[in-house]
Length: 247
Image (tube, rainbow, N blue to C red):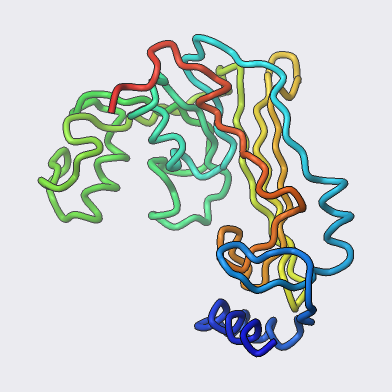
C-alpha cells in the first residue's frame, strides 16, 4: 500500500491539480493497471460502463488517389496539415480558422477567421506571405530566409489561399474532450473520417480513458479492459496519389 501511494505521488508531483486529486482517490488492492506503472487500483464504477458504451473502432473502406482532404481542427494549418502536404504525398489540405480571438502563434498560417486551402509552394510564392511572416516573427530573419537548422521547409513554403467553400470530398476530424470530476479526469479521444458527398462515416475510433493527472498519454492513464484501441490514421484510409515520400 505504501509503495502504491508513493508511486502515485510521483506521478502527480509538480501539479497542484494532480496533488489535490490524489487526496480523493481510493486505492484498492486489484483491478486496472496503470500505464507504465506496477501500481493497481480501481477506477470509478462507472468507467466500465463508459467503456462498454463508447469504446469503438471501425474502418469501412479505404479510398485511393485522394489529392487532399479537409482537416477539422479549426486553427488553420496544424501539424497534421503541415505533415500531410510536406511529407505524406497530399497536394493540399483545407481547413477553417474559427475564432478571431486566437493569438498570432495560435493562428496557424492564416490572417484571420475563414476557410483556407494550404499547399506547398516554392519560396517567393505570393500566397506564402502569412507563412513567411510567421517564421520571421520567431527567427528575426528576413522574409523568405531560413536558418541553417530549419530543415522542414528549407526551399519551400506553405501557401495560404482563402476559399469560399471546401472542395475536398473527405474530411478528417480528431478531437479530445476532458470531463473533470474533481478527483480525476475522463478523457475521450475521437478520430473520424467522413465522405462529405454522401455523409457516410467511413472510419471511426473513440477511446475513453481515466486519468488522475489529466494527461491522456501520461503514466497514470487507465485504459478500458483489453488495452489501448488503435486510433484512425488518415494516411492509411485516404491514400494519396503520390504516396508518402521515401525517408
